Length: 53
Image (cartoon, rainbow, N blue to C red; front, side, top):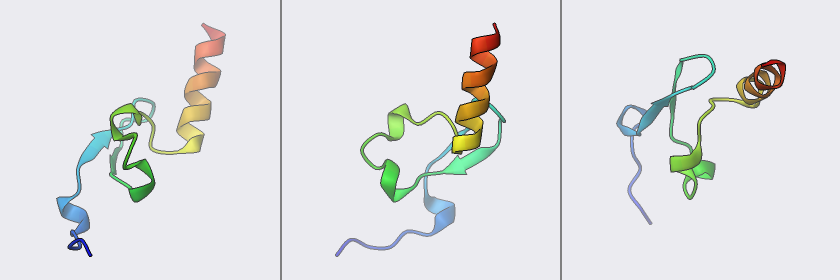
């Protein structure tokens, strides 16, 4: 079984939409390089803002 990591030791990114930092999650393990938004709400806001331009 892999060793547990503290949340402070996990990699972080900044959300493209809101600019807040968010930490790595297990469900993003395979696509971490592609993750850009911290939440579904930020993704929806970015999509909405992109459609207006």
